[in-house]
Length: 169
Image 1 (tube, rainbow, N blue to C red):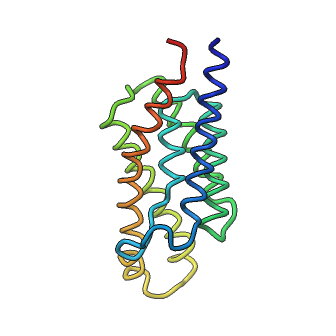
Image 2 (image 1 turned 120 degrees about the horizontal axis):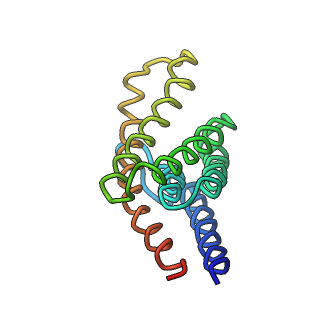
Image 3 (image 1 turned 90 degrees about the horizontal axis):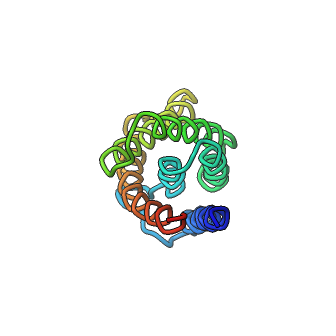
């Protein structure tokens, strides 16, 4: 019976990632608020990793990272690698050291989302030698970080609901 619930839960997570990929990559579906749109797949993979064990978290992080590279980045591999590794270690940390709560999940989502977006900005904008780096950060990346964190809060509740609903009671 447990395997059936696990299969349903993983299918729900996969459909969630696919739906978020479609929503994120559809042009003009969501307006750009303060110059950018949120990255839906980043907090989705992170919130899944809070609840699942290491290996499923790794694969959902990899799937979210690959889709994020395809839909957002023209540098294939950055988000696939960083999100895979991040989700694995977040799952490991939450399994052994932290309790999954709203505050812990929000803090980790904010730290990892901001960190990955800033690292992406540094590698592919600042170190690439593109001009007006600080202006460009505040024009596009700062609002993207903020909106991604807000979306992460909503996705935490969605994934928590899926995890609790689709497991053996």
